[in-house]
Image 1: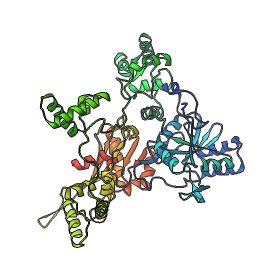
Image 2 (image 1 turned 120 degrees about the vertical axis):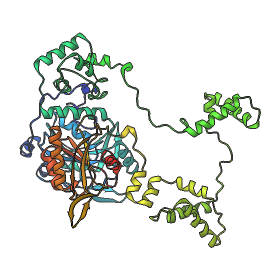
Image 3 (image 1 turned 30 degrees about the vertical axis):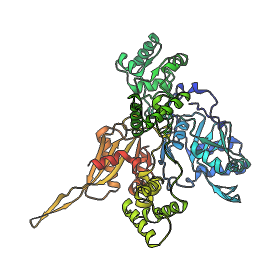
Image 4 (image 1 turned 60 degrees about the horizontal axis):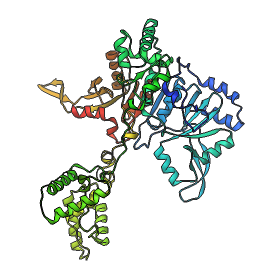
Length: 578
């Protein structure tokens, strides 16, 4: 598949039309390390570049990723074309590129975390020092070798503000100047890829098509002819319409025809797993007509200020003010409301909009800087501690402390003290009072526009977890007495359907035996294994045994950030229900 990105020569410069279909027509053969080593002389590399690429192939990854991840899901991608697993630090950045490279005919081989090199760059104080640098990937393309650094767009913006001379953007193309210079001297190309132009809908569709390729599904010749004849009679049809009109055809048949370029679908616009909205045609030109602006879904709105969209309480107050104006009441307050309506009309606002959030009273703070500093210090030293005092207890301590100190600083009321607590970052306050896990629970939700889409197909992504059940089960009886024990439950929940897939009960603490039995029960119950398994960072779930078993069965694996239970919500919700 030809991919679009202006950041590098190794990615195609074709337009967005090329994303209408997948041009990969057959399962790619496995490219071994020996195959890639044999290709190295063909690149015409310098001795330094040859040695670097050779070490990247024959050595293990120079580091393990994700040990200190706080807000990203890291994992290992099982690459069918490479016959090994590749690490990634984020499923919205590195993973989406791995999925694309898997289907990119220009990418022959890929390795993660190549050897570290030394860079000369300035630190935050402007002092030039030599520091170590490890790229994310090294790609072995048909005509060149490319070293890749992957960052999210927001991360790149932050780095460019902090180090403007190192992280530079030029017409949408990002460059990390110190790394680019060092690799250029070596004779290799270094590029920076961001996720700004990557569509999550397209990523989900590429995963679906990749699974069809992995299973090697073939379409019956009679069904193929019926599908083509059906679309010859009608310009375009949805997947659901074809399934209804052609008896015996399946989703897998349609996906295989897309891979073979017999059918065309805009995989950047509609999910292939949404049959009622995804349109198919026999050529790209017809599909473009079908995807006229009138057919497209509305753009997802970006976050707006609460002044433009007030909360329910403020809207209710504005409605009451408007009712008083319409009632004919003659009072000083109503005259003020009418004046605001007249001023708002000049600015193009409706009467209701004019009465939202009126600025009344004196906005000047009534608390002195000394009093404010005293409250801030007390909040930091008393309220934001592991003792977790209530607002009332903390305020009482604050009041007594100032009274006993015979200070001239004015004592604020409990309401003001609470308001100053609420003005602080909720994540920072919760972390100081209850630790990392509580701070993560209080963290702001991720923006919808930057989230990875949830699994769309059964067994696409499965969450697993262990739970010590709160029940006592008799295990033995002796001398007229029953001896009980609490059992452990190991369960797998499908992310797409939110259904139980498999479980295993044992009186023994979680171990590799529990995980092995879970996989066995899933295979016996459903006839196949999951594509991706997600879990927290338990010792058994990060063990070499577990990672090796999943790699053997070509199952992707990823883990939540430490102490971030919301990333494993499906399994955690099951534990809570039980």
